[in-house]
Amino acid sequence: MNCVLFSVDFFCYFDAQIYYEGMSLSDPGTYHKIALANNIDPNAVLELLDDPAAITAARADIVKVKHLGVNSYPTLLLRNRNELISLGGAMGIEELEERLARTNFIQNTAGEHCSLDNKNGC
Image 1 (cartoon, one colour):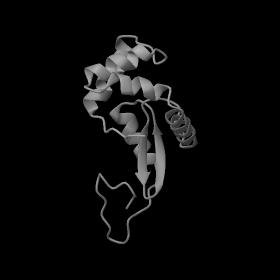
Image 2: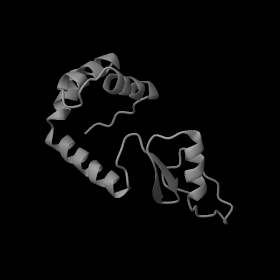
Image 3: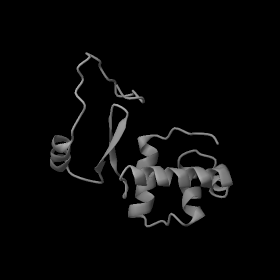
Image 4: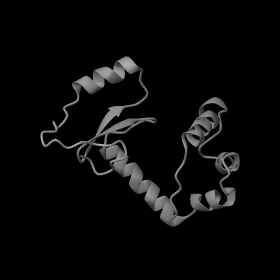
């Protein structure tokens, strides 16, 4: 299956269609409209909705996020070395700061530095 990197604009448009326009995630027309608006081949998107490999991959992702404690969208995940910590769903900055303050982090004692794009932890 091909992986496509999406921009913030794509997700903002997607959210607007679902939460503000009331489009249904169960309606293939929703994905067709979103694909067209984002210069993505809508026929390829609709084919993926019925692709057994894509369905299997989506189900595996659902199991994975449930094990991470994700039960809503959006959810903020924080990487702490090789561990992912769920900080929860939508929240204000004050609540985020409180949750971060309560989170136990592995202290970096080896002088290592992390970058934002580090996918394997520090």
